[in-house]
Length: 228
Figure 1 (cartoon, rainbow, N blue to C red):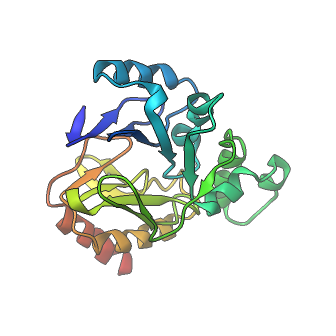
Figure 2 (figure 1 turned 30 degrees about the horizontal axis):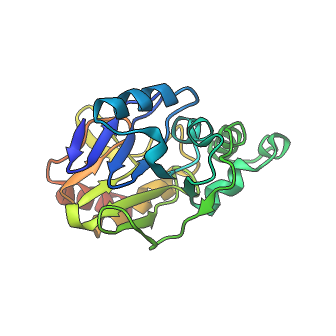
Figure 3 (figure 1 turned 90 degrees about the horizontal axis):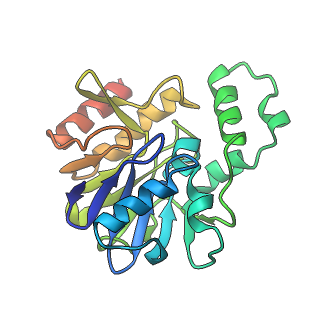
């Protein structure tokens, strides 16, 4: 479905992706392995083609967000795959290292999840504050906690914020990332303070419908609660 001009929320396996239909196509996240057919079906519905895909931006390195990348870019060298280097490091961690004992179970669990995830071939690192040439300029906001390299993407002209899994909706309320699946849940909560500084009309969530109910107010409340 189209959630903003030229911005489509697309059902994939495991998590939704967001398709930006400019002259060329940009995809935010790629679902799990096996999601390619779902994307191709959606593209046919809107009169576009997979060979128009120019870049894939990964909000973080969990399998339901980057598992589908490899099958989308196979046999192509003209698609740029973007991911924060802090998550790329986790994806390249050998399983034996991920399984090493640590006092923090969440960190160990997060390392194992990432080490078992298929790593995108030849990815390009993105940095906090970087402006991507999408939707008139989309800013990368590093929001570590859910994973070390979790990022949100802010399209200022549309006041549209893509949050990956940094936020979720529980019982009708906007709230922090999942504690179980986060490497550092306290850090994920603190990261919301960075989002509260933005002017947002719509929040695009990977596992829920878009949130448009007083985004600034809700983000401010979450940031204040985290600070307290």
